[in-house]
Image 1 (cartoon, rainbow, N blue to C red):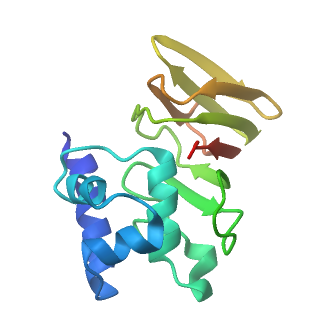
Image 2: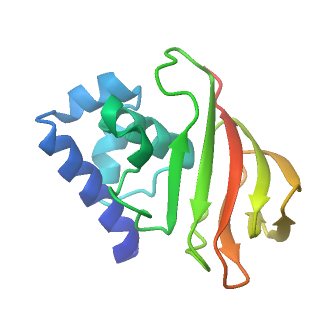
Length: 170
């Protein structure tokens, strides 16, 4: 695991500890299993986007909605900022969000259960899906199975943004 990926786990731990929460507390508030949080914090696994959103939502106070990012102010260590569009909606199976990507960010692939719908709002986003790469421009969409290795990043030397919906079955 790269040092950038390990930084994400360290920051999650720092924010959890700043709240005075145990891993069990964060698990209860986020719905993410304790063993997964533990592995993320140790840098053993790179969290899937849906997991990052759940952890981010749990770690973000209601008065900090605009800075709803795991890594604090601005972009996280992987070069994107995720904004939940469903804060306060408990027991949901879909997670709508807006993501802003820094110019030419990290291409971190992941896989998890579920499905994703991506709508490119601005800029150009490279979607890695299995062995394939596709460029999405403003107005383009992609719908795919999340169990296949996938990743998104801005390309072309400019930032980009998307709307996304992650469906994770119960």
